[in-house]
Image 1 (cartoon, rainbow, N blue to C red):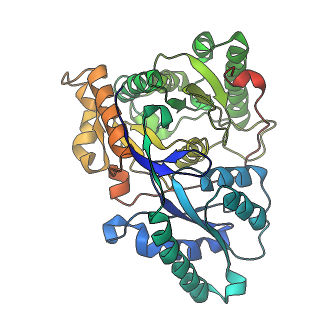
Image 2 (cartoon, rainbow, N blue to C red):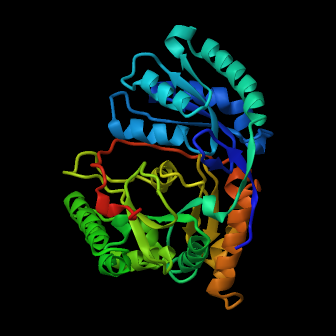
Length: 406
């Protein structure tokens, strides 16, 4: 696949498709200040550039998961500089996080609201820093990128009866072609793959990995049984889906046909190209409620695994994007696309109407990936969508059987 474009070179050797300033709140009490700091640049609909984005962790108490997620996100290749916004009395270890960002070669500054003199003074100081650092990182080195440099994630949300027969399998076709070109591709989530575990195990690169995959799905089934609620929303039923198994078959289609080479947990970065499954269901007993309370929680976890961008298949019509990485919206339902074309990048509903086949739409998705990697804005970026959420979770490290043999 002869594709190449210019990306952003990072000191760790990784390459980004965006060059963002991340303004990061370290507790919900600092969120307003962080968002106010980013506001002049944040929203393209209001004349902003979209290259300054607010994200963060809302909890006041320490979280190994929250720290790992933010460390991975703030050293993501799409991020060029960081401003950490602290209230001053939260439990987050801001110095440790700042040290990790600095160690990655990125400029970072810590702004503590209580020390700065309150909201107004902190917002003013934060904007001064952002204005200066945007100019500095804009002069950063560029580097050639090819498909083999990419990590791409995929998710489906607002699913309906069309998702599993148009948008999801078309995304799978794009994945297969990316993987052939050396890219790493990540699909999720184990809670929406119940009933598909044997099929995935049969596609695993090794028997040991196959057992890990089956175990991850069984863990998810036990977790949801304890909660008394599967990953199945009222909107899924209204859209024609009947069971979690039926939804799972549709979600499984977006993985394509490639061999599964690894199993990841949030924050694990693929060491090689190939197809990876992301396990998003916490380990151990149920402690923190529903594994992911909305689609953006899963998008953040895909990005924390290094995804340069995320393919989002929707039948009912989700409008969300994300901070830190572009989201490409693939609409599975032609009627939804007719109503919401301004929010969608790809009309996979054409398959249902006999106007295109899976390979053709897969090729359109591939073209959109490369255009986005080269700097073109997705619809969610153009509309200013930068949704972001983190919650409390707990994971054990993955074992050697989960990763490709080097």
